[in-house]
Length: 106
Image (cartoon, rainbow, N blue to C red; front, side, top):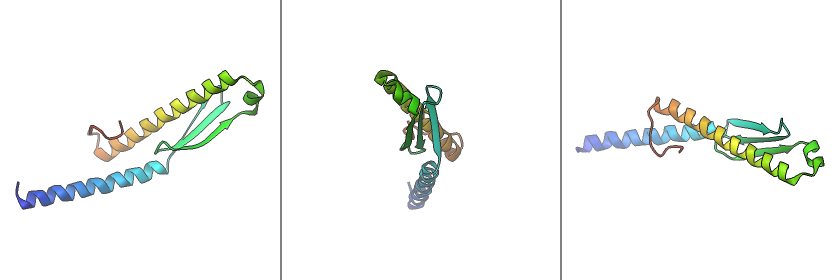
């Protein structure tokens, strides 16, 4: 490989790194919200999979049914993580032009 080829490869890597940082910034600004139990538990997260809020309806708290509450929270957390993963994959597809790159947002 010539020096020119290495320079071109290095430039492409820098461009990709810059675009990846842009995707990360975009994801940080996006919000995903899910609910379980007919809206009794709501969880929102940003596109980086950081939980932003959890809301538990007073009616559910007043039921004093720990097992139901725990199940609904687990369900909401799992669903919000799935939605964030889907969002990240959509963003990466947009970034890569549909090309699948192993190891990016598994």
